[in-house]
Amino acid sequence: MADFLKVMDKVWEAEHNHNDALVLHYNKKEKNYTFYGIYPYTKLRSWRKIRDIIKRNRSIKVASRKAVKDKQVYQEVLGFYYFNFWKPMQLDYVHSTAKATEIMVFVVNVGTGRKKPIVKAIQRIVGAKVDGIMGRNTLKKLNDFSEIRFDRLFDVFELTWYDKLVERVPRLKWAHRGWKKRAVLA
Image (cartoon, rainbow, N blue to C red):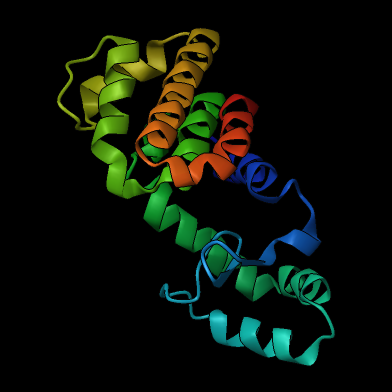
């Protein structure tokens, strides 16, 4: 089975390049803090603790480093990603950590609200019935599919997704270069 913790390590690389000072940051364009990409309005109970850390420290970077070191907070963050991203995409049943990483890095960026078109793209890539359901047949085809080929074809899907998104919503152009980098990272 795919290794959830190794996959999350790649997600952290995509999100903040393993720089603990950047895990907690203020997003000017979104007018809010995020911690490991999680916003304060989510059900992450640790936000109360994170807010206290922010208040007690002289800078967001220092607060970020301290919040990252809190093991209880980190376990809750992992649980958040497991239940909100990993589990809905059925990644417990993907054998390859590399394939799970490709999928997870993308899904974390675009959200599970777009799960159906993502699953349909996976199905097209691996030759499964295109119905948008990550079922047994899709998972079998995905598990049997070449890792290298899946990586290449899924990267093409991601890059096309981001190009079309910026075409539809030009104000998001500021993020396009970072999205492209993320797409080929995993």
